[in-house]
Amino acid sequence: MTTEQDQIPAPDSPAPDSSTPDSPAPDGSAPDGPAPDGPAPDRPVPNSPASPSPVATSSRPAWVTDELITQWCAWVRRRDASRRGPDRAEPVTAVAPFDLAPIAAVPACAPEDVTAAVAGARADQPEWAGTPLRRRGDVLLAFHDLLLERQDQVIDLIQWETGKARYHAWQEVAQVAAIARHYARRARHYLAPHHVRGMVPGLTKVKEVRVPKGVVGVISPWNYPLYLGVGDVLPALMAGNAVVSKADSQTALTMLWTRALMAEAGLPSGLWQIVAGPGAEVGTALVDAVDFVCFTGSTATGRTVAERAARRLVGASLELGGKNPLIVREDADVAAAAAGTVVAAFANTGQMCIHIERVYVHEKVYDAFRAELVRATRALRLGQSYDYSVDIGSLTSAAQLAAVEAHVDGAVVEGATVLAGGRARPDIGPLLYEPTVLEGVTPGMAVCDEETFGPVLSLYAYGADSEAVGLANQGTYGLSASIWSRDSREAGRMAVRIRAGSVNINDGAAAAAGSIEAGMGGMGESGLGRRHGAEGILKYTESQTIAAQRLLPLGPPKPGQSAVERFVRRTNGQLALLRRLGLR
Image (cartoon, rainbow, N blue to C red; front, side, top):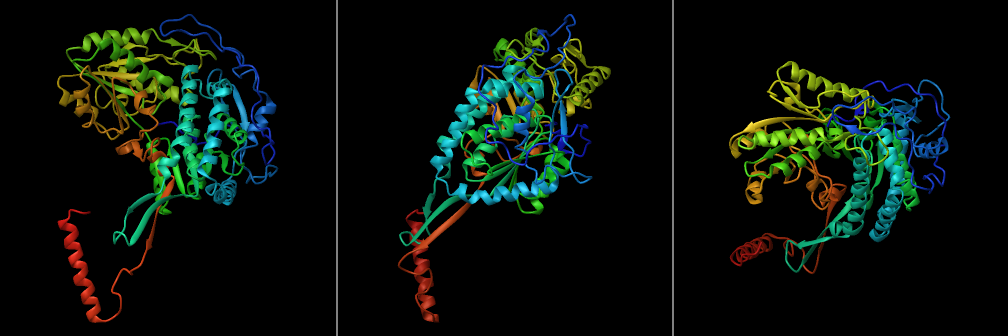
């Protein structure tokens, strides 16, 4: 996933200084009020073509005040906010995709701030670990209710910071609410002690229990600031850990708003600490200090995170890049498959680690599918708006727009054909790019071999299912895949042959990603570990075996050669008896 710009060494945008208190105000969450309807920077328009329309002078939601931003930024952990001099990290200011205007100066942390945040979290964690699961669950359920009640506020912030369409921002709210509810209700089941057979049945009593790791570090990207930024925090807290999160510099306000909401839901202030600033400094310091790392981002940075964690013998879960395939079988419902492909490829403007970039279509239905796909793609409404009138929103950064343009333009120069889209739309918004369908893409083209992470897909024809599986398994990634077929049983047999952490049948990606009780993660260079389901909370714990021996010792009752020999003969006989009885 080429998402975390500030997790690799790169200069941050200069920003004016800001001054915020060291500790958050008690009322740091946003106030109640009517549903915000902020300025709509532009009207939605069909994908192609459209008449120019001016962008509004400011995309900042009308309800967001400087006072609120100051309250949210107070959640950034800094040892001394008044420190000045060359060792003081300068604030970082993101740029709003809708209008390229500055968003807010967010305080940046120095490595010593990260050390202090981890120390503070570590000091508070034991008391939280001793808090009954029911009480921890109550906090998550209170957060669930507050999140749904005030969803318009955080949806506005997500759109302001990422430029995505409102529906795609709302999906983050729905997913995080589901995660909160699931772990609040199911953690008792996942974390329950497990009684197992002891060495000597009846005499050795053994159970496995789960104990928290301690302090978990979460490093999340900008493309899903609520879902990826908070969805991994909730099970870590529910398991009894403290958490230190590194907020992405592009989307810090979304995380800080959410942290304030968690305080209102009853989470003690020291248990979830937020740090911010350049990833090369702050992210590295975090990996070097915590007891477990949860990272979502690029494969290149993921390797670095894994290496640093491994040196300390600290575990890590990593969700990384993907070049995800979709297969349309000969028996597929072509119209349904085309509609599903459009959603899977262009949701979140293609800035989604599990979105579809490669589409393999059986040669007998290729022409019909291509026509339906092009029609559906051209019908998408492209634009910028704080309402639900837009299907596809903006890319998040100029760098992401440049990457998309380079892949598409390079492919065209090398012989590919644009069937739909294929151009930026500065007449609508500064970072908008039309949903694009390519044909004639061949190996060696960047768009064929590399993750684009934008609203671009490539069409390919195939002749047999075995060929389609081979094509789907090309490359080093293995995150997500999709198969469309009227024969779900045969599609299921194909699915187990595809190297991917999730395979969706007659759905592009949402069926697996939205099934919170099932694990989600990658194979190969798409990562290690899983979020969601049992592993999504167990990864934040250690397994501890507690064994109690009763009545007789495990060994000869007294010293001496004859006593030892009798013990060995008796034990050998017991082992043979257990074998004959078929006992494990």
